[in-house]
Image (cartoon, rainbow, N blue to C red; front, top):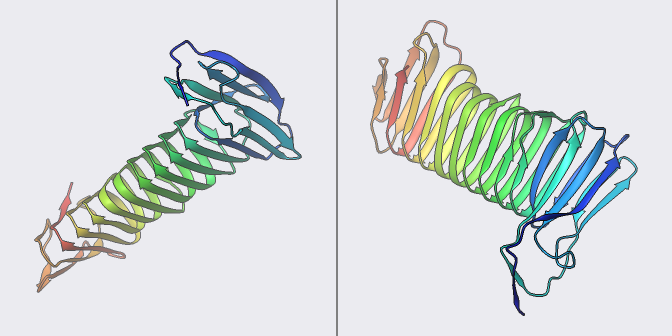
Length: 303
């Protein structure tokens, strides 16, 4: 084995256009490139590969159409030598009018799709690398990452987000139902709407504006949420960490708080029964706000 240092300028090694009329299932399956997906007013898909390696050593990308399916795929290639300073990037110019299914798979590298889009459904899987997707309207979404940070814009739809390690930042997530799972990291969401089941094993959760119902949980870390309104019961849970919730003074709800090891403080009067605090807040209470920690404090206040 020998080393090749690749510090030269990149050049275009592939630049082709493809007709996708009649396609309703488009996939991009890449091994180790950085990938940009950019909207274009054109009706054709344009695939551009740039590399600073010699052509006999650079990545290979294949494009295939089978009926209504269209696929861009990086071929597996055995390289002789260890290439340092490799700079390779795949840019896919996707027609803005395309609004059907999109599948994105990346094993190593960064994936960016920043332009606002409408899709019927999207499936994203990143093994190692950062993922950034802008505004998206999509009835069905599924995102899974193993290692890396995820940044999303304003998303509207229903689906699942699953992270093994890394931070999750979302500008807004709206729709009927959301399931969010993270093993390690931090979750930051600007606005969250709908029926939510959010669970992080080790890390913190911060939501700047929440309207909905469901469960927000952290096994090791804190939960901090600003509640605009409840559309059903909401549970805030920490095994080891602090719960902070703020609400408007006009809010009406049933409250129940319990901390096995930690204090409970609220801006409204509660009835105390050992470690359990309860209250009926406002005159039109319909839904329950349940806050419980094993080890940590609870703070519920008016903004």
